[in-house]
Image (cartoon, rainbow, N blue to C red; front, side, top):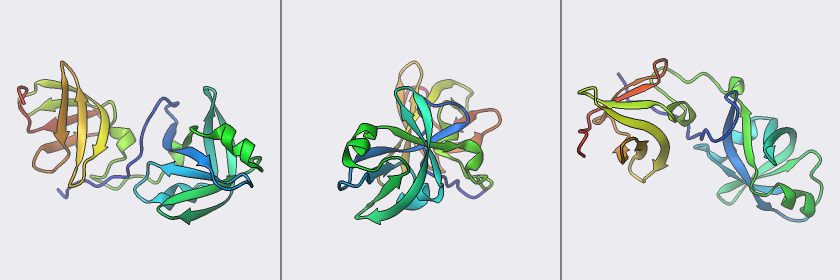
Length: 179
């Protein structure tokens, strides 16, 4: 079995049918452009989607992406209805999501981070270690933050993560309960 690969998407407090892919940062200039902090592996992946759902005061509103460009190491975007710096500033910090159905189907043995969040983690002795609460990028490899009787940081590497069962929402790891 080849080692899994996945897009680095976050699943935050959003409806099940939406996947949070980034957040709006600060205004960029005076014509309504916004800097975008993406949670995707490549900054311009989010630009592939012409409509974003933006979280505003607890509800999601659709915005059409009029234009975008890569700037430095990030993305800047112009949204329909956001025509000046004040309008852009009002959206600062808002989460960006897209419908889950819009995502390409993950190839076999590849996973979206959002699909891993909330999965039950058991070791090879079937001892419950907890649930995946978060995934961290840690340089050489990613790390599962597993919360149960205590918090465990488990490297997401082939030698430790033995099996991911998406349908059963279960991850089996070679990790002792007392680690």
